[in-house]
Image (cartoon, rainbow, N blue to C red; front, side, top):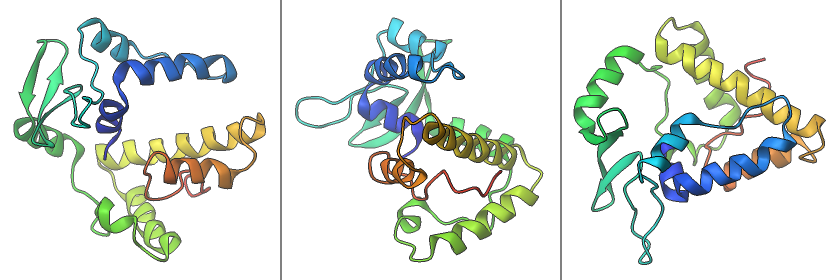
Length: 178
């Protein structure tokens, strides 16, 4: 599950509310999102129906599968295959050592497996690898700051929350991207 699917799952309005609650406790951060505000203003909120099925949000779902992505500019959904092709071209090749998420969560020696992927990403010169490395560095720094500011008790606690509550395959506070 990617970040936008997770936001849809929780609800765009709920994520925005959580960010607003957290913002005062992170004085060096601005957790406000103009995009979330725009989506809420357009009435696109995601979330769950009472039967547990997914409401459309950033992504449009059909029988639990993603079929389109919302474009706030046109106020309509764009076929996800068309968008995927454009994104893949822009982002560039994936690391050859990449492990699909469903397999990655089951890897026994995650440090070795993810270290190989991270090394490869750091050495690549694609838009996707640069974004991923920056995301890794930022996640690591934010997690460490949560501990330093005593919002979290330890790096292990931050990683545990993200591994178990946010379905990360690997703890983002790992010092790998420092």
